[in-house]
Amino acid sequence: MNILILGATSGIARAISHRYASQKHRLFLAGRNTDELKKEASDLSIRYENENSIHYFDALKTLDHQQFLQGLNSEIDLVFCVFGYLGDQAELEQNWDMAENSLMVNFVGACSILHHIANDFEKRKSGTIVGISSVAGERGRASNYYYGSAKAGFSAFLSGLRNRLAKSNVHVLTVKPGFVDTPMIEGMETPGILTAQPQKLAMAIENAVNKKSHTLYYKKVWKWIMLLIKNIPEGIFKRLSL
Image (cartoon, rainbow, N blue to C red; front, side, top):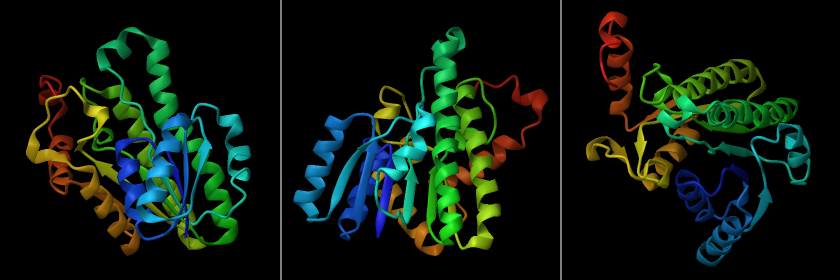
């Protein structure tokens, strides 16, 4: 199986790469940091003796996305859209350029590349798309509403793709993690019981792909936490620090 991993140097992506490389799948590792991609590709090849290749990909360069896919010179069976940018909420509030970058990477860039992939899969009537969204998109909160609003839009986009592509035998999975122990949350104090390890998340994602699930919350408790948060009356919610 040919697997494209967009944002292949992220903590979650690395765990996914190791999971599928161990099964001898061919990996196409894509991202901006080609030096890190080379190291990752070499490590995977040594560990698992699988076939893999690296490809420069920039989520913000949307005009290049179709050409990027054509440059792979292979039909992709499974796509993981893993890239993202959290940013510092306080800084984003004061700097529109940074805020716009967050919105562009997390929403526009992701929608752009998946737009082209979806069209290809629809023509072929096969393929699987996995988008890494976030529980942060369930309700806007003062602590991360730039990131959260982009992820809310991305979740809606994936839902629409799933609805559209179902008749073409294309599977679309939305993954909504809570805290994951990766460099993205470095420096943040997160509850251990609510913080997932990327290797276990990767295993859960693989299981959800195999089962053709629609949405995966991880850890599972986040589904109920966010249900509670979504149902707090607005008059009370706006007085909370979340």
